[in-house]
Length: 498
Image (cartoon, rainbow, N blue to C red):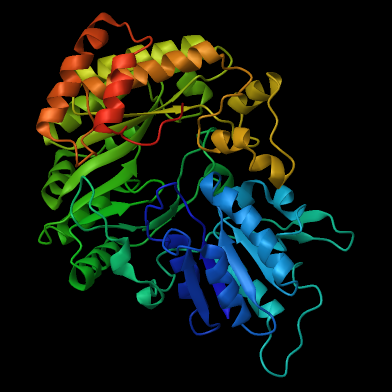
């Protein structure tokens, strides 16, 4: 029995479909029995996993998907406890964090193997080597020929094989939902009453040097066909009465013809949907495609505007000639189509974080003048390993990644993983407070549409109380807005980076 575990991903245990484990399970089907355990749903993950391990036979395998932040913070102590209880347990980690920091993971006795990148078939090959069929013996050194695998050599030192080719989503088997209680993942969101997530493509064809995806895919983008994605949408609606879908692709809108065909195919479903794209890709879409997207229920697109500085955008390697004026043009175009732009910005970039932050905050006000409905998501710049000029500047300021899992799960680095670090050497505390105050005023004057619990009266109250600050540009010490936040519990468009 293979145990696939999804650690708790947020403090409130928001149930988001564990899509990476569904992809693994689909490949395992017909080869190995498996069970999916979701830390967001079970009240006592340690007890649940312990029970499954005891029932799994003489060579149990626990596979854990790990994102930095809450998942890492839970996965480390949990795997250590399970290894102590079950010395014969094999623990395999995969996901963003172990892909980037495989050597750190393998320096800890809690982790036996790491699968790097999109590792569906690498995982299957490793299992076949570790758990041979009847009459077969385990392979003594299974790791050498398996692309995408990191392991310990005969001296106990971490080593890694080259990344495996990205499996084509078009050719992967469909997800096997029989191992999940899918109705427990249906959520009310700004899109609809019964929202569910989906993933239709792997990778991104761009090389932004602050993005962790780049090192995993090296500019490749592979996608299911429009017909496959539309069929998945119909399955969602027919089986679970889904009325909204969130596409978690790194770049859903890469191929215009695919987007247009998908929009046509779901036009009769009365679905709302959301996805992530690029400004310089979407600006090339013709009006017919925009009309099809709107009529098919596209409500909002997440896009990385990233900065109000053309120089910073160049240092980020955003590609093409992306500049702030094109962000404004996209905000205007989407307003004419009634589709909400959700712009993310990365503030506090070296080498001059203060000038960078204020230039971008000033630009955000311009975005709101063009399209008041635009959603604004603000992150604090956090380095990605070996990712160009920004990372080099961060290192020059004294930045270095932890070398142990204990340091990664310390409070300071847990905050770093969620883009709210208090210790980045190039960001002064005063600037961090100024960015946080600006964000509080902005989100009060322009309450997010993603908070479906925020009524019209509450929105008017927030706007009225914050108006003088927004118009005067005086953001410091917004004590009245902090008090109002506790009273109304109004939310940011997404978890803040500050």
